[in-house]
Length: 376
Image 1 (tube, rainbow, N blue to C red):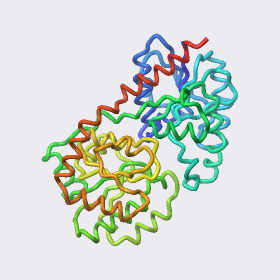
Image 2 (tube, helix red, strand yellow):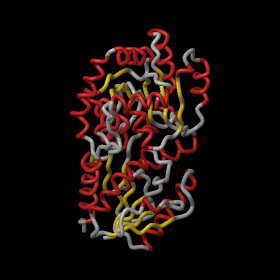
Image 3 (tube, one colour):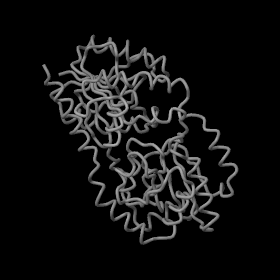
Image 4 (tube, rainbow, N blue to C red):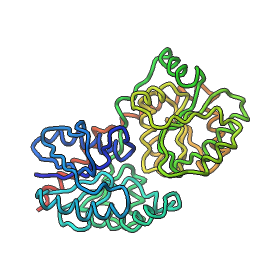
């Protein structure tokens, strides 16, 4: 069989959530199933390391799809023509975008519906596109996958999709994350903060990640505790975020907040493993991959108590109200001062982390693809 895959988020040195999901799951599927041919649809020149096996045929389809007008052209025309030309039996899209102009069976992964619940977090053009087209994609797909039970129920309720059409395949975490010895942690801290302990946030600087409340709460924590602990923020802006910039400039503790930008994965793993705790106080998440990676790194967690985060974090985190700066501040205080608590959270994370693996995710995804391929 010929299986076409949307691989437009496989971007060298620039991968975020969709890219890592695609990389980790599709790599395993392709390598585990040499009996099938896979057509990888890129929207720009690709790196050869993304051609995972000899049963992959890479194709670059124009135009580069990074704007709503170009989304329509790429998926409805470029993808549609390629599916027909190459006689694909199925189209799998790990970012949920589908063609509305083809009869080829399609399976999409809808990670979350943040744009339905917090449309103000997105610029007008992508917001309009996502809210107009994702209900159509959900109905067009033969089967849907998503990454948490929370997101599954959200799709069922918001779009009226039958539960039987949606399968949950949790995200995993990079296997590069691992604990560091005490000596190794001290070396990382010396490099990053001059030896001072720190909390760490990892993710895009997007509105739903709640960066503004996080840094305000950190400022309150510093004022209350007089702690020397710093806050390291790893990630790139998705869109201009002037409120965060203005808030940052007004903080009394701004000199204790470090923005690193995007980091190479090896360095990022070390930074997480040497931190006092990972902080993810988003008010909306479909999953929250950094939580799993913190568990792998044997790092305590401070996270929000909304949407999918409690489902993933379980008893490996201090849960706080992401809409309350005081609640987040109290979480900082508790984790900063209570070493016994941090050690218990780490122990709970070690026991929990095996629930989330890319191997399991890939097998679940393949079971859905295989079932569809067998349909008459």
